[in-house]
Image (tube, rainbow, N blue to C red; front, side, top):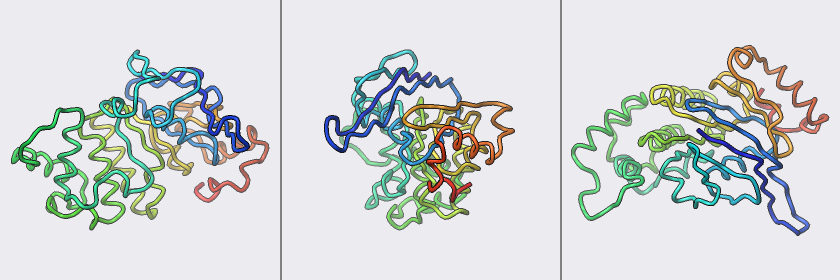
Length: 265
C-alpha cells in the first residue's frame, strides 16, 4: 500500500552545509505491516517519515500510496490519510483546549467544518468509550485541559487522535523517546493494541533495539540515507540485540560506536 522508489533528499544543496539525507531509499510496505525502523543518528529515519508525510519535498524518486503517486501532493492533503505521532508529547495536541475538544478536532479530519457546537452529545459518548480503552482514566476527565496531563497521558491521547479516523498509514517518530521507561512501555502497549484492533499499517522509528525487535512484523535498518537490512516474520522474531549490533558494525565500520543507540540496547 506504500511504495518509496529511489527516493533522494538533500538539505542545503550547494552550500558548505550540504547533507545527503536520503540516497536512493527503496521500500515496499504491504497492507497491515507494522515496520520498526532503526539506524544511527543521521541515518535518514526521520527524514524518510517526513518525506512520506510531505513535510519535505524530494529531489528525485517517487512516493505512492495505494497505487497513487503522491510525490507532489502537499502535506495538508496527505493529512487526510496519514496519522502522525511525534517524539515531543507537546506537539500532537492543543494544550489550552480540553480533551474532548482535541478529540473533536481529530474526529473532523478531512471534513468540511461549519458553525455549530464544538462537541456533540453523541461524540462525548464515543470519545468516552475510546478513552476508556487506554486504561488511563482519561474517560472521566473529558473537560480537563490537555496541558495538565502528564507526558505519557498526552502521548497516549495523541496516539488516539492520530488513529481516530483509521488512517491508511500511521507514522510514529520515536514517539516514546521522551518518556520514562515504564511510561514508554505503557504507550507501546497502547500502540500495539490500537494498531492490531484497527489493522493499521504503521512505520515506527526507534532507537531502542529491544523495542524494534519486539514490536511489529518487520524490521528495517537504515544507514547512509538508505535501507541496508530488511527482515520480517520468524527471522525477525529470532533476532537478538547482538545480531543488530553486529550488522551495524558490518555496514558502518564502527562509526556508530558512540551513537546513543548503545544506550538503549
